[in-house]
Structure formats: structure tokens, C-alpha cells
Length: 266
Image (cartoon, rainbow, N blue to C red; front, side, top):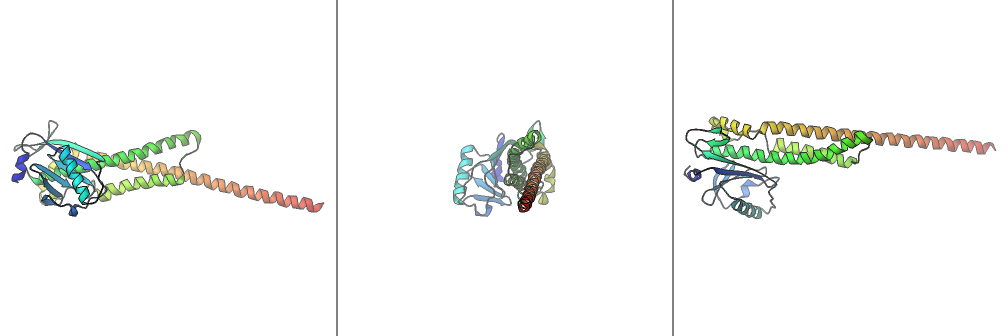
């Protein structure tokens, strides 16, 4: 594509930012569309933007000011409020002879939209994984001290409602990761151009998507199991407390009966 030849000079910066839970890609207008799936827009002379419905926008050959201007305009047009929650950046080079990860650099064989889509896909997954990692890390930081406190004192400061919320938060992360972001899914362009499979594998390994996804699942499982254990302990304690109340009431009734018998005997 002739427009992409403008990107040949020097290293090209690509940045993926997570800005929203979901983006209505069909509603974005006012730019030249180079592709619909994923939505790819030409911005100004040399900038490209790839928008993913699960809330990630990838900027190619655009500076911070251009990025912020695009986000502000599209958020206003969509009547949304966008903030950059996480960002993942990398540089890549074009070359007619080589492709892949060489000497710590990303090389793309030729200026083609399909290759940019593969790169944008992987970079977007890396960005949303970072968001999930931060989310579950915050939950993990809250759960871990409670487990330590329970070990030391046998008492947990969390209420049942708090623990249920923690479990719900972890399940929501897992749902978004599997359902909405589809971390393990490959880009659609590979169906039409299977020769790009190697490039996708190289980039996936470079950003450690599979390893990070597995580690994240383990943390989600650990948070869930810990929260469920604490919840079971709280419910057991509540059940024991209720049993003691019942025993106390029975004893109280027996004492009242004995007192009535004693007083009646006099």
C-alpha cells in the first residue's frame, strides 16, 4: 500500500493504550478507513490508528500530542470519557530481506496493512493483559494480608460481602480475558494470509502473551480459592455462633423451668 511507504524511514513507534471497557468501532467517523476488521484509520499524513472493540487503541507513527488529540475527539464524538489506563509501546523496522525478532528488534518484511494488523493485535493483547495483571495484583495485595492475619489470630477483618466482591472481581477479570479480549485468539488476518503465522508466533513469544495469560489465570484461581476459604470460615464461625446462641437459649429455658419448679414447690 503506497500510504505505508511513508513509514519506511527509521524505526516506527507503535503504542497500544487501554481507554475503555468497550468501544463502538462502528460509530467512529471523520477519518479515512483503511480497514473495517479491525477498524484501521489514517490520521493526518503518516499516522495510523487501529481500534479494537474491547477498549484498546493502537497508534502507529503518532506522537503523544496526536494520540491525545485523537482520543479526545473520538471520546467526545462517542459521548464517552476515556482515560489512558495502561500503555504498551514498541518500535519496529521495515526490511525487504528479513522478518521477525532479530538482535532485539522487530522487523517487518514489507509495508503491508496485514503485517501491521498482526503487530497491532499482539500489542493490544499485551496492553489488556497488563491491565488485568494490575487489577488482579491489587486484589491479591488485599487478600494476602487477610490470609496471614487469619493464620496468626484466627480472625479475618473482611466481611462476607467484601469477600464475595473479591471473588466477583476475579471472575470478572477472567470473563473479560476469555470472552471479550479473547487473549488466546489469533488475528483474523491469518485466515486469509496463513503465511503470517510465523510473524504472529514471533511477536506472541516476544511479548510473552501465553506465559502471562497462564500466570494470570493461576493468580485468579489463587485469589478465588483464598477468598472462598475465608468465606467458608466466616460462614462456619457464624454457624457455630448460632449454635451457641441456641444452646444458651435452651439452658436459659431449662433454668427458667427449674426455677418455676423450685418456686412452685414452695
